[in-house]
Length: 283
Length: 232
Image (tube, rainbow over all chains, first blue to last red; front, side, top):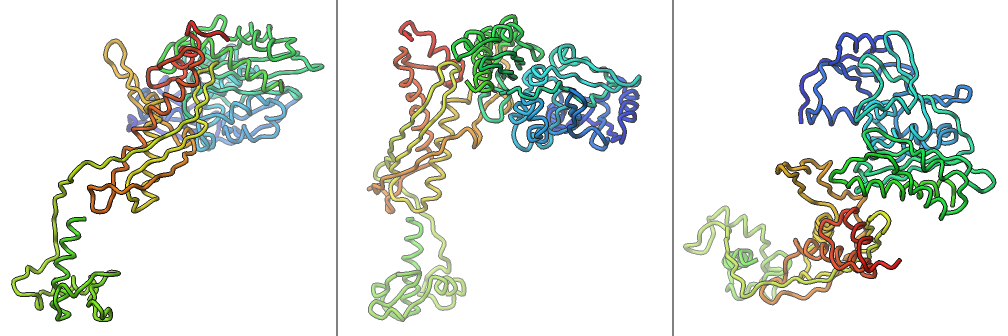
């Protein structure tokens, strides 16, 4: 219930944050909104020697458009992501997922960067960023590098970020005119997703032209449902959508746990993907 | 109630003494002991209590206190009873159960404080709903508890609970001086079977006759889709 003692620094620049992380070696941990990290500390599932608080670092919060990309600062809260007219217009799948995170209080404290760094396989935003084909911008001792979502999530609660790198922003290709829906299946209002399907759709002449599907809790990392995406292209009605979406769980390796067996999760992935596509496409 | 009656009976003796009349001429109405036929001649309970505390003008031999204790040995049990109706919707593709309407009609005897009674029914219904749909102590093969925190041991929050229609009949309990019965467990006892039966009833066309509690989505999904009687 009470975390192990730790040192605490609150730098005002990203470079200072990186220096602090370097000095802590493998024992440093970044704290953003604290909505995932604090429970982990309190349950003593982790005991970092130093917390680097990003709340005083300027420039990490907010949304802007740069060319054909939408740039979301890592410290932008879920509430701000969900309510941003720019995100809703340019990356609706991200806004849709942000709306469903935890509860209202969590959405006002928790941040996009925090969720993506925590990399919980059940994370709503992780699935959405996969579906949005976002790119994570990491700031380390040697400057910045970009890692696409497909390479960023490497394992359970593990990302491509090094211990001395700070996730500063997420770049998402602008997709105006696309529609989206995030279908989250959870047992109680505040419970994590058993499975979630983040779907973005582009329609053309009444038919579905392109689809992106990101799934959470269907393996150690969020996954892209490529087979279902291919099968969904060209779908025109609910019947074809359902048949195509049934492939969503193909090739996934979901866990069996108290929330559901792997078989049930694979089944849910298909159902939820079909529903998300139907809602996104207005079928 | 019996203890209050003892206090009242003793206070009546004090009132009669102060009002200089026979105890049988004193009646207790609206918080005061009054002389029958002359209601302006009165001593309030507060005045009686003050006189007992001062203890210098009491009937001979009376102990100067109004404390009282009583033991209630009922002639019979009280029998609260009721009927709870549940309209449940089952999503056969995911196994999710939604409670569309919940109506609880209980008879808990005479109701003194309706707000508390309704609160007890609400709380009991939610506890029973939690047992039907969510709460479960799960152990692994090594005997380790897997549901050791409220992240795994699910409880419904306000957002997961349907609006509950509460109504009642009031049949006084014959074995109790006020006619009251119990209300604490009324909601708990009825709601669990009402919810499970609603779900089983919804799935009866698919050949489902029972599902083990709690009705997790996976259990409901398997029940809805595993029967040989499925024709859809």
